[in-house]
Length: 211
Image (cartoon, rainbow, N blue to C red):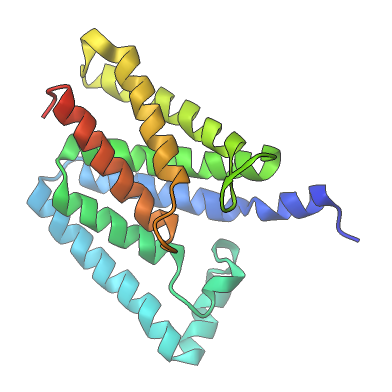
């Protein structure tokens, strides 16, 4: 019989976490040197191709079989016959690139790429106290701590909020934890995380006069 420890170890999906991290960091690297219009055009093209392929495989069983075999280390079983989390993430990232300024988008991408998978791992490994759905207090605490550190480094590097660095970083940590925790209907959190975090970060930037 599979033990709880063995089951939890299999639930980590290490390849998936690494794929998530590398994919989001690649998006941030592509976005960094470009203007907002250039980045939006690139995001639209990439999303059109990859999401289009993801949709197409659902209607062509042989293609679906080949692609799911090729990408099986990165897929959940439930994604074999529905759109993948990667498609949700691409749509979410494209939306924030279209709607928010660069400093907001970059911070949101760092949170999405680093804090979201760490929170998931901590939630699986140490999660005992359920908050909403499968999300746990321990996962949310991990998201808060990681996002606080990300904000501290980000604000220091770009010389933002120098007179209220700790406050802004803690607030950023809260934003990351909320974005990771709060469900929006039954939408994939790879879609909702960047939208919620970018909206709240934009509000914080506006409130503190950084826009």
